[in-house]
Image 1 (cartoon, rainbow, N blue to C red):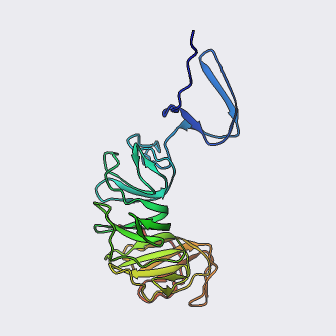
Image 2 (cartoon, rainbow, N blue to C red; image 1 turned 180 degrees about the vertical axis):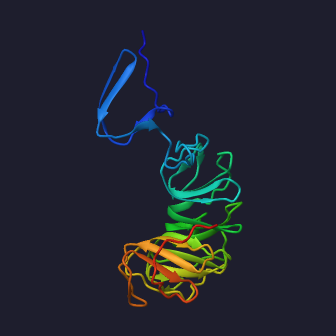
Image 3 (tube, rainbow, N blue to C red; image 1 turned 30 degrees about the vertical axis):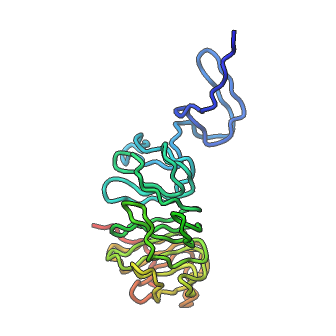
Length: 267
Protein backbone atom coordinates (compact mmCIF):
# COMPACT_ATOMS: atom_id res chain seq x y z
CA UNK A 1 0.00 0.00 0.00
CA UNK A 2 1.39 3.40 -1.00
CA UNK A 3 2.05 5.78 1.84
CA UNK A 4 0.42 9.20 1.71
CA UNK A 5 2.75 12.12 1.22
CA UNK A 6 2.64 15.28 3.34
CA UNK A 7 1.19 18.34 1.65
CA UNK A 8 3.59 21.01 0.47
CA UNK A 9 0.94 23.65 1.26
CA UNK A 10 0.39 24.31 4.99
CA UNK A 11 -3.21 24.22 6.20
CA UNK A 12 -4.15 27.89 6.39
CA UNK A 13 -6.71 27.40 9.16
CA UNK A 14 -4.29 25.65 11.54
CA UNK A 15 -3.68 27.45 14.82
CA UNK A 16 -0.28 28.96 15.59
CA UNK A 17 1.77 29.92 18.65
CA UNK A 18 3.67 33.07 19.57
CA UNK A 19 6.88 31.19 20.37
CA UNK A 20 8.88 28.04 19.58
CA UNK A 21 7.26 24.58 19.77
CA UNK A 22 9.73 21.92 20.98
CA UNK A 23 7.54 18.83 21.26
CA UNK A 24 4.37 17.37 19.72
CA UNK A 25 2.44 14.29 20.75
CA UNK A 26 -0.77 13.01 19.16
CA UNK A 27 -3.10 10.43 20.66
CA UNK A 28 -6.78 9.59 20.99
CA UNK A 29 -7.87 12.43 18.75
CA UNK A 30 -5.92 15.11 20.60
CA UNK A 31 -2.62 16.80 19.73
CA UNK A 32 -0.49 18.06 22.61
CA UNK A 33 2.25 20.65 22.07
CA UNK A 34 4.90 22.05 24.35
CA UNK A 35 7.39 24.87 24.04
CA UNK A 36 8.22 28.45 24.86
CA UNK A 37 4.94 30.24 24.07
CA UNK A 38 2.07 32.02 25.81
CA UNK A 39 -0.58 32.06 23.07
CA UNK A 40 -2.22 29.48 20.82
CA UNK A 41 -4.83 30.66 18.35
CA UNK A 42 -5.87 31.26 14.75
CA UNK A 43 -3.36 32.61 12.25
CA UNK A 44 -4.43 36.10 11.22
CA UNK A 45 -1.42 37.28 9.22
CA UNK A 46 0.57 40.44 9.83
CA UNK A 47 -2.37 42.77 10.38
CA UNK A 48 -6.06 42.51 11.15
CA UNK A 49 -8.83 44.79 12.44
CA UNK A 50 -10.57 43.72 15.63
CA UNK A 51 -14.11 44.17 16.82
CA UNK A 52 -14.18 47.21 19.12
CA UNK A 53 -16.51 45.44 21.56
CA UNK A 54 -15.23 41.86 21.73
CA UNK A 55 -11.63 42.38 20.62
CA UNK A 56 -11.96 39.41 18.25
CA UNK A 57 -10.34 39.60 14.78
CA UNK A 58 -12.61 40.52 11.87
CA UNK A 59 -12.63 37.40 9.72
CA UNK A 60 -13.17 39.18 6.39
CA UNK A 61 -9.74 40.86 6.41
CA UNK A 62 -7.20 39.26 4.02
CA UNK A 63 -4.10 37.66 5.52
CA UNK A 64 -0.88 39.65 5.04
CA UNK A 65 2.31 37.59 4.81
CA UNK A 66 4.61 40.06 6.55
CA UNK A 67 4.62 43.04 8.88
CA UNK A 68 1.97 45.77 8.73
CA UNK A 69 3.58 48.95 10.06
CA UNK A 70 0.88 51.53 9.35
CA UNK A 71 -2.81 51.85 8.52
CA UNK A 72 -5.01 54.73 7.41
CA UNK A 73 -8.77 54.70 6.58
CA UNK A 74 -9.71 55.19 2.94
CA UNK A 75 -12.80 57.23 3.86
CA UNK A 76 -15.19 54.57 2.54
CA UNK A 77 -14.92 51.88 5.20
CA UNK A 78 -11.71 50.35 3.86
CA UNK A 79 -8.02 50.70 4.63
CA UNK A 80 -4.64 51.47 3.13
CA UNK A 81 -1.95 49.35 4.77
CA UNK A 82 1.81 49.70 4.56
CA UNK A 83 4.74 47.72 5.90
CA UNK A 84 7.08 44.98 4.82
CA UNK A 85 5.15 42.28 2.94
CA UNK A 86 4.76 40.77 -0.51
CA UNK A 87 1.19 39.44 -0.44
CA UNK A 88 -2.19 40.54 0.85
CA UNK A 89 -4.67 37.70 0.65
CA UNK A 90 -4.11 35.94 -2.68
CA UNK A 91 -2.78 39.11 -4.36
CA UNK A 92 0.85 40.08 -4.80
CA UNK A 93 1.33 43.47 -3.17
CA UNK A 94 4.73 44.87 -2.32
CA UNK A 95 4.70 46.81 0.97
CA UNK A 96 1.51 48.79 0.20
CA UNK A 97 -2.06 47.64 -0.41
CA UNK A 98 -5.68 48.76 -0.32
CA UNK A 99 -8.39 46.66 1.33
CA UNK A 100 -11.95 47.81 0.64
CA UNK A 101 -14.90 47.80 3.05
CA UNK A 102 -15.83 44.22 2.10
CA UNK A 103 -12.35 42.93 2.95
CA UNK A 104 -11.22 42.54 -0.66
CA UNK A 105 -7.79 43.58 -1.91
CA UNK A 106 -8.31 46.11 -4.70
CA UNK A 107 -6.29 46.66 -7.88
CA UNK A 108 -4.36 49.49 -6.16
CA UNK A 109 -0.72 48.36 -6.53
CA UNK A 110 2.07 51.00 -6.53
CA UNK A 111 4.82 48.41 -5.77
CA UNK A 112 7.24 49.87 -3.24
CA UNK A 113 10.85 48.72 -3.12
CA UNK A 114 11.51 48.89 0.60
CA UNK A 115 9.57 49.26 3.85
CA UNK A 116 6.63 51.62 4.35
CA UNK A 117 6.50 52.93 7.92
CA UNK A 118 3.90 55.68 7.54
CA UNK A 119 0.91 56.55 5.35
CA UNK A 120 -1.28 59.65 5.35
CA UNK A 121 -4.27 60.44 3.17
CA UNK A 122 -5.17 63.97 2.13
CA UNK A 123 -8.07 64.26 -0.27
CA UNK A 124 -7.51 61.92 -3.18
CA UNK A 125 -3.77 61.55 -2.55
CA UNK A 126 -2.04 58.94 -0.42
CA UNK A 127 1.36 59.91 0.96
CA UNK A 128 3.75 57.12 1.92
CA UNK A 129 7.09 57.22 3.67
CA UNK A 130 9.63 54.87 5.16
CA UNK A 131 12.87 53.32 3.96
CA UNK A 132 12.51 52.71 0.22
CA UNK A 133 14.22 53.58 -3.04
CA UNK A 134 11.48 53.40 -5.67
CA UNK A 135 7.71 53.37 -6.15
CA UNK A 136 6.10 52.04 -9.31
CA UNK A 137 9.51 51.63 -10.90
CA UNK A 138 10.38 55.32 -10.40
CA UNK A 139 13.14 56.51 -8.04
CA UNK A 140 11.78 57.93 -4.79
CA UNK A 141 13.95 58.48 -1.72
CA UNK A 142 11.91 57.43 1.33
CA UNK A 143 8.82 59.51 0.56
CA UNK A 144 6.29 59.55 -2.28
CA UNK A 145 2.70 60.31 -3.21
CA UNK A 146 0.26 58.22 -5.24
CA UNK A 147 -3.29 58.61 -6.48
CA UNK A 148 -5.47 56.99 -3.81
CA UNK A 149 -7.75 55.44 -6.44
CA UNK A 150 -5.39 54.19 -9.13
CA UNK A 151 -2.08 53.94 -7.27
CA UNK A 152 -0.39 56.00 -10.00
CA UNK A 153 2.64 57.98 -8.86
CA UNK A 154 2.13 61.73 -8.37
CA UNK A 155 5.18 62.86 -10.31
CA UNK A 156 5.15 66.46 -9.07
CA UNK A 157 5.74 65.36 -5.48
CA UNK A 158 9.35 64.26 -4.99
CA UNK A 159 11.06 66.06 -2.09
CA UNK A 160 13.46 63.24 -1.22
CA UNK A 161 14.59 62.47 2.33
CA UNK A 162 18.13 61.30 3.13
CA UNK A 163 17.06 58.96 5.96
CA UNK A 164 14.17 56.89 7.26
CA UNK A 165 10.76 58.47 7.81
CA UNK A 166 8.78 56.79 10.61
CA UNK A 167 5.77 59.09 11.03
CA UNK A 168 3.56 61.48 9.06
CA UNK A 169 0.60 63.73 9.77
CA UNK A 170 -1.39 65.77 7.25
CA UNK A 171 -2.92 69.09 8.32
CA UNK A 172 -6.74 69.32 8.33
CA UNK A 173 -6.68 71.94 5.56
CA UNK A 174 -4.55 69.71 3.31
CA UNK A 175 -1.83 72.32 2.95
CA UNK A 176 0.97 70.75 5.00
CA UNK A 177 2.47 67.32 5.53
CA UNK A 178 4.57 66.82 8.65
CA UNK A 179 7.19 64.07 8.63
CA UNK A 180 9.35 62.68 11.43
CA UNK A 181 12.12 60.11 11.55
CA UNK A 182 15.90 59.89 11.47
CA UNK A 183 17.25 62.15 8.72
CA UNK A 184 19.34 65.27 8.11
CA UNK A 185 17.92 66.81 4.94
CA UNK A 186 14.66 67.07 3.03
CA UNK A 187 14.42 68.39 -0.51
CA UNK A 188 18.09 69.37 -0.37
CA UNK A 189 17.56 71.57 2.71
CA UNK A 190 18.85 70.91 6.22
CA UNK A 191 16.06 69.43 8.37
CA UNK A 192 16.97 67.24 11.33
CA UNK A 193 14.43 64.48 12.13
CA UNK A 194 11.34 66.68 11.64
CA UNK A 195 10.04 68.73 8.72
CA UNK A 196 6.93 70.35 7.32
CA UNK A 197 6.28 69.98 3.58
CA UNK A 198 4.04 72.35 1.63
CA UNK A 199 1.39 70.52 -0.39
CA UNK A 200 1.10 69.71 -3.18
CA UNK A 201 4.66 70.72 -4.12
CA UNK A 202 6.51 68.96 -1.28
CA UNK A 203 8.80 71.94 -0.69
CA UNK A 204 10.21 72.08 2.87
CA UNK A 205 8.66 74.80 5.04
CA UNK A 206 10.41 76.92 7.68
CA UNK A 207 9.58 74.58 10.61
CA UNK A 208 12.96 73.39 11.91
CA UNK A 209 13.01 72.58 15.67
CA UNK A 210 15.76 69.94 15.20
CA UNK A 211 14.82 67.20 17.67
CA UNK A 212 18.08 65.66 18.89
CA UNK A 213 17.08 62.03 18.33
CA UNK A 214 14.67 59.99 16.26
CA UNK A 215 11.00 60.98 15.91
CA UNK A 216 8.78 57.89 15.83
CA UNK A 217 5.29 59.36 16.25
CA UNK A 218 3.38 62.47 15.17
CA UNK A 219 -0.14 63.70 15.91
CA UNK A 220 -1.96 66.95 15.21
CA UNK A 221 -4.55 68.63 17.40
CA UNK A 222 -8.05 68.62 15.84
CA UNK A 223 -7.62 72.18 14.57
CA UNK A 224 -4.08 71.50 13.35
CA UNK A 225 -2.55 74.25 15.48
CA UNK A 226 -0.40 71.99 17.65
CA UNK A 227 1.93 69.23 16.48
CA UNK A 228 2.77 66.53 19.04
CA UNK A 229 5.88 64.44 18.54
CA UNK A 230 7.28 61.43 20.35
CA UNK A 231 10.51 59.50 20.00
CA UNK A 232 13.97 59.06 21.46
CA UNK A 233 15.04 62.73 21.44
CA UNK A 234 16.12 64.62 24.57
CA UNK A 235 15.88 68.24 23.47
CA UNK A 236 15.02 70.51 20.54
CA UNK A 237 18.34 71.81 19.26
CA UNK A 238 16.72 74.49 17.11
CA UNK A 239 15.39 76.33 20.15
CA UNK A 240 17.61 74.92 22.88
CA UNK A 241 14.56 73.63 24.77
CA UNK A 242 14.83 70.38 26.72
CA UNK A 243 12.09 67.93 25.85
CA UNK A 244 12.56 64.32 26.87
CA UNK A 245 10.97 62.09 24.24
CA UNK A 246 7.71 64.06 24.02
CA UNK A 247 7.10 67.58 22.78
CA UNK A 248 4.43 69.90 21.43
CA UNK A 249 5.01 72.56 18.77
CA UNK A 250 2.97 75.51 17.61
CA UNK A 251 2.51 74.79 13.88
CA UNK A 252 2.29 78.49 13.01
CA UNK A 253 5.48 79.65 14.74
CA UNK A 254 7.36 76.37 15.21
CA UNK A 255 7.86 77.29 18.86
CA UNK A 256 7.69 74.69 21.63
CA UNK A 257 4.62 74.56 23.83
CA UNK A 258 5.28 74.33 27.57
CA UNK A 259 2.66 71.60 27.93
CA UNK A 260 3.09 68.23 26.26
CA UNK A 261 -0.36 66.91 27.14
CA UNK A 262 -1.82 64.65 24.43
CA UNK A 263 -4.21 66.24 21.92
CA UNK A 264 -7.84 66.48 22.94
CA UNK A 265 -10.20 64.00 21.31
CA UNK A 266 -12.40 65.49 18.57
CA UNK A 267 -15.88 66.29 19.82
